[in-house]
Image (cartoon, rainbow, N blue to C red; front, side, top):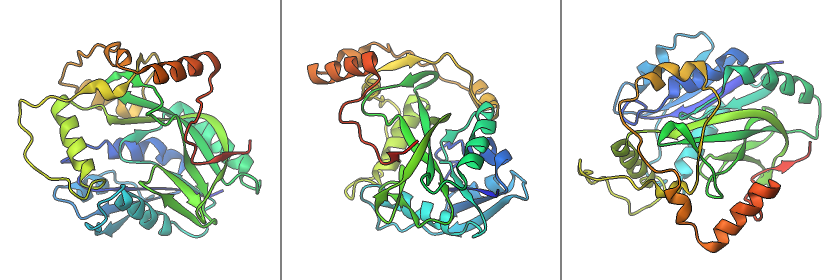
Length: 291
């Protein structure tokens, strides 16, 4: 069984993406790893080169600056990386620049790939998610945050990144997946307040055609209220993230109960139903679970 990892990245240094940690977190189960490095204004390419692994193959790309609606540029770059995976690969393992897999989950992930390799009903593997927010100590959980997404797909299928590269489709239909007991740890919202403002501004450039790059005042503050609900994280982080976590230089003093109090009656009711039953009514699912 041959496994290929793939990802895309641009301006990782400027935007403080944990891309090195992301790649290293799944590299042990990959036989090759394709990284689509976009035209950057910092040392992003050198950052990837310095991982110094013979498994890694860099594809230099130029982002289409006209794709400024709905995150389409992210999907296009993901497809560029996927299309450069060796054709003899059995599985393609996707990781984004702000995601990470715990080393304890790797044996199970590989086992699931082996067991599903010759099962035509399973086209991909569905992962659970931890969305860390504001701090490495808290997870955001609500209807605004997707709790599952596809990160492993079969290479020989006509797979394409969907919308803003959150997930995948095959010929514009939902992929048939197996839900596995492994997590993607999403760290994109763990930054100092000013860093989150820059992240939001940068993302808006690829979601909103009218977005600007005006300088953000140093006195500007980030509204953590969009978290909805924060839960204290009681687990352990991937070992590749520990040095980054140790270097934290800001204090996260947000009251985790404040955002929850802002929820309207409908959202409070739906959240209560989810807590009692584990069912999210009307949840968006970009996949079809078959196992």
